[in-house]
Length: 516
Ligand code: XMP
Image (cartoon, rainbow, N blue to C red; front, side, top):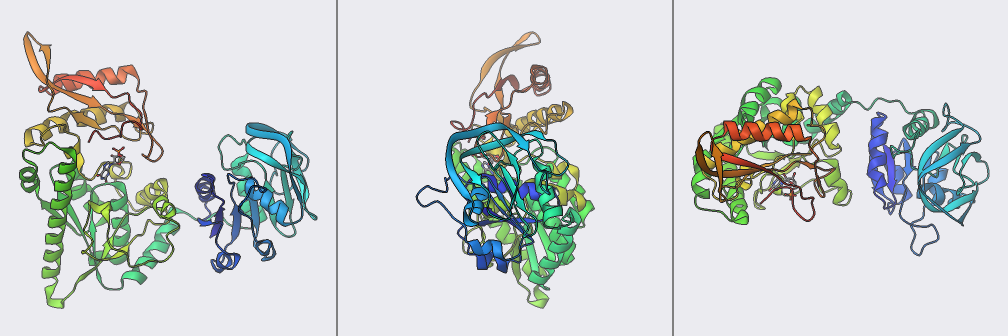
């Protein structure tokens, strides 16, 4: 892999993504990792990321000069550029001129990194210190007003660096710099493709699972669907997927899994129709946390029943279900501290809150992937587009989008309104712009309306379109008025119980995305 050494800014993930966009596999490692441990990963190249610190700040992370002696191509970015310059005997100083944002770069020699790019270009900067003199053996490639040395390289030793952030889109030729480093500087080939990811994962899954039985809770979301399709590709009928139909899905979703997903992937699927069970457990409940607990608890019971049935069916061979497929993604792995080791982990809340005493060995074929890469792999595996491009949908489903009691009647109303909103957003080509758009039924609220020649006393629904990178923060999406108008007209015309459509214009924080 190409190792991206994380010096503690938010940029490491972005660099890792850009390297992968260049079709070269990358992994993020903490700067605290020893050079020996880094080299043990047999890196094809190393990128030192930006960081929040000044190389002169107390406790500023540094880099072991041994890293540059190992013969591995290295590129330093921003802070990584400065620690590199310092470690190799260059001069890093406070120039008194900070540069933030778009900055004019003057190219003095294109070298490998800036090959084919113009003499004047704009790059995105964020630094206070600057490299005043390059280490011996390095060619200076560019300067800016605040950075006498803004890019350098030593072709012989295959060491490269830029003061700016090539991973940021505002850097005009950023991706070109990264690609020159990877292809020309480090001699790597662009061969990390969805097809190769699938081949690698299929081999890894086979090695992990052997001929044991594997189970997967298929929620209908992108991650569990793609993970299941990969495991199916690897071990076929050893995998059983369980879809718990809790009756809280949106219109058409259960059918998409039951019919389209199975047809496309050949997955062994057990659908458990548990709609009655969930409805009676939820009867009379309006408190959001209580609803979540009930849905989680019932989910576990159903999943345990399903597991017992699978074991009973395979009983003649005395087989157990030893492995559980989870759709864990790379950002979760990075955020929980790099996630090295620990193959035997207890199942956790991702699949609707499975309990601690239900121990499986986890199969996590998406652990190395970002969401858009998961989608690309899913498409390559032939997972239906409606599933691959699906918006995030909470485990408790429509149960937490009904403010009030979850009844069959309320679910039916909400399902119809939600389908109209989704249909119109798709028709308007807005799916790429929004992260998700919950439709929330205010079952506890009524308001007066007039329809035809009569007074109505119906319920409102709330449209909650949000834009977000990761759902941790979100802003409400400024949808075009005419699209809002069409959705509102259609919902009030076609869903008799609803006589008012309102728009949620709150960001997160202070509000959450879901209403409950
Ligand atoms: P909130 O409402 O906390 O939602 O801003 C953040 C994101 O998480 C989704 N969400 C859930 N997903 N189980 C899930 O699998 C849940 O219990 C759950 N609650 C919220 C929500 O749709 C949004 O994408």
